[in-house]
Amino acid sequence: MLSVRNVEKSYGRGGLFSERKQSVLKGVSFECASGECLGIIGESGSGKSTLGRLILGLEKPDGGEVLFGGEPVGSPKRTAGSLSAVFQDYGSSINPFFTVEEAIAEPMAGGGFGGGKKRREDIDRLLLQVGLNASYRSKYPHELSGGEAQRVCIARAVSTRPRCILLDEAVSSLDVSVQIQVLRLLKELKSSLNMSYIFITHDIQAAAYLCDRIIIFREGRIEETMAVEHLKDVQSAYARKLLDALITF
Amino acid sequence: MNILEVEHLKVWEAGSGKSIVHESSFDVRAGRCLAIVGESGSGKSVTCRSIVRLNKSSLRQSGAIRFKGEDLNALPFKALRNKRGRQICMILQNGMSAFDPSCAVGVHLRETLKRHYGWGRGEIEARMISAMESVRLKNPLDVMNSYPYQLSGGMLQRVMIALALALEPDLVIADEPTTALDTLSQFEVVEQLIGLRERLGGSMIFVSHDLGVVRRIADDVLVMKNGEIVERGGVSSVFEQARHPYTQYLISTRSELGAGFKTLMKGGVSDAQR
Image 1 (cartoon, one colour):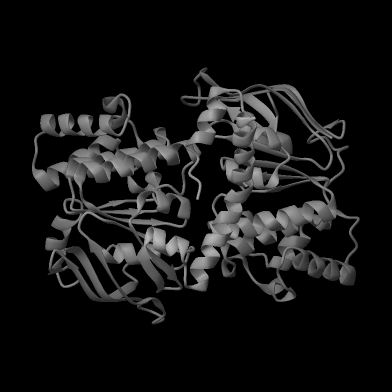
Image 2 (tube, rainbow over the protein chains, first blue to last red):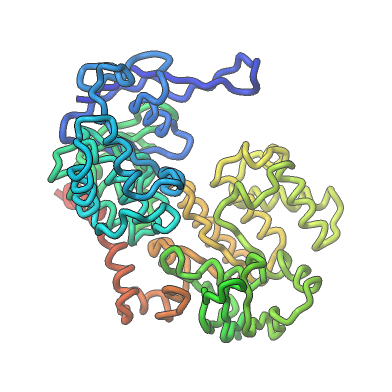
């Protein structure tokens, strides 16, 4: 469904008129099937968030292409709302002047989702789906805790019934006890709504909890790809190092 | 012997009178590491900062904080300032905001060491280089000449640890030092913190919400919820026989997060045996 083909990206470095470029992504290719949960694991600075922005069509690749359902992302032909995102910084992801209801309704305003009474019912259902009750509708973002705000972001992401959600460090800044609640929620939603996830994170444990397939990402390249059941038999020295460095409980 | 005794510490908002930490009492024994765990908003960072009176001016505190028998809460500001850094050193969560963004990291380090020890430029440089090498920072001189934005979070965290090594404090307060880091840097920083304790033989307060890291580094643990200490004791006894439902909840959620990974890895062991 999603296919990333030989994508390259570099940013200018060292001032406005400098010719120096830093290459962030170096020929990345992978596919994500419908209904699959794909984890992308890498250190900070490995280029995994840049890859996320390219997948969403927020930035254009310098080389290669990102296809979603056969169409390049960011093209007008792409069905609006079929690709959603949840980001790490829940504090700045919701417009502070919007209530929870307005925030969730915003992407639905694109059309095709009905209005008035149906819209309100939809929002109640979405809130219920992410484990919040209808009393949250009139709250503002600053009244929410981190976990609640992230649930609202998830409700907003699923409001347009997307086929794929990109989660960029979506649980990393939450408390461990809240992380597990959000991960459980994501697992439930995935089975009930039949979506794919692209789960970008540095936390192997969270990825192992949620994902079917894992890509280990390093310095703009794919180091290794494996099904989650084969996580123990990683080949590359870097992946081994990552697993050994993990502090378990 | 207790190096730090906190009695009836209360922290509240001056404007609204809302209580943030209510009547906490705890001790840190010499040479031991005390971990404070809890979810965000439980008051663990505020507790830490109130020890050196670094809370925002809108917060008020009362109670006795005896450091080596001296009440820090009653100390005049100047006398307290001489203790901060030299005797009680803090390692903060966010390296980017802990250092002055407008000057090179080395300027900050030099200023701190000069203020406390009055060393000359050459001596400071020599000591910082050896401290930085011991936390495995390559090219210490380059690091000192770079600005905070040029260094990664893990590197800044290690610079803070190196500074703590050079200051040789009696008590180190580490406030979520590993939370903002990725797996590899987290591992390195935890290793360096353990090394720091071994080298200084000093005491430490370690704040975290990750029980895995706490188990690795701490001797004793305090569990905080909504500004109250709900459970305390040795790390193994608290984690193995948690009495308070909140502690049990923290432990069960942490185990659930790691469980999937652990079973996957265990499968690896049995495969290898086959």
